[in-house]
Length: 526
Ligand SMILES: O=P(O)(O)OC[C@H]1O[C@](O)(CO)[C@@H](O)[C@@H]1O
Image 1 (cartoon, rainbow, N blue to C red):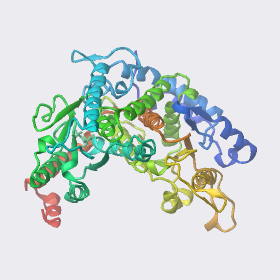
Image 2: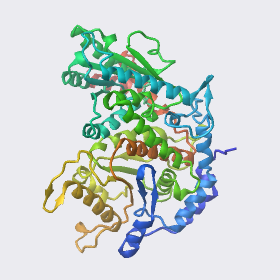
Image 3: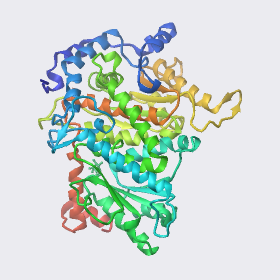
Image 4: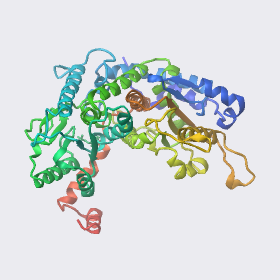
């Protein structure tokens, strides 16, 4: 039986607070630093590693974190989740996104259905559909092949699939598995849909409407926008559109779509990249085999998250070091910094995944907590970020923990040698330099040029960003967020905080306003 307790009631948390602080600049200098880089490393799936040498931890802190993991019953809570307990207490739902990529425990039967079988069946339907589109068996009315896929969705129905598409676009082109270009429409700003529609040939475009609820204002508005454009082009929208939704949504039984693929209420939008939500667009863009490889990577990483030994469980370790930084060292933000252009939207996806999950002030029973929870997440790919906000990261008054991601090889296989190094070497040299600069700092008599150091970072390193490593990376962060939610005793799987704004926006549009709502409406000429 698992016991759900607030962090500040755990003995191990008090012990963690009492452990001696580690002087990061000191432990990372000289041979000691070299030794840490070699040993403070945990294997991940698909040949990747999570290296935490530049985190302000040592044997004693790690021991305290291991005790905390045990007392908080993180392994047992993960097992409860994948074995089908009602973990999402706010919405009284199971949490089953890991089942889209593998069976980690017992068969989970809900609503009379084996859930793993259901997700596999939906992916099989997507596969058959995508294969027919690629083979020209499903075509536009003129019998011509579709060349472009456009996803319409927002939040979890956009960010994850978009980030994954961008992550694999160049890889797929290089490996001759690029089938269709993908575009994404998300914002209710009409300029978003207009710009995408202006950039495509609508007659050869297939639209994937993605909304779990089938009620999201932005998505339904953009669907109408697209249908309008199709009608103006003399095209039958129902021959150009498929839906991805839940079986209970208003979109499910409509004949307005060529086909419908389902996920369900047990998969949160921000955790839906490995369900039909990501499956449809990614299978159409790159072929179902690539999507299968992505799922295999995620499944392999999920298995590691089951390990009880903290030092063998990269997601749990990353999560606990994050809790230490947040709750003991008092750091309020985390930057995600992939040294990979293909991961340009990965930080944006993690922003939703993390902040919508753990941005909460009440525990899973709705009672206020007396400690800080989820950090602010932001990020940009390196080296671009270095020329933008790294100034604050190096010398600002706040210390921001950093999550670097780097690959030894690029995806396109094209490079040049300029001034005795390739661009790939320059990219990797920069991430190495940054980690040491952040950790060790630099003495200087001129305070303006002085770097205090002691700024913690970790890095995930892989050989190359492939479908498998991308899947593993996604799973790592999803599981990290889950473990942190367990430690903070939150329900990481609902998002009530987004509702109020939606309700007020409806009132504004209905002109049912007073006070500041009315005044701001006038300011914006609504
Ligand atoms: O897929 P849907 O139901 O359209 O929801 C889109 C997004 O809206 C949210 O509910 C937030 O408003 C997210 O959690 C979700 O990913």
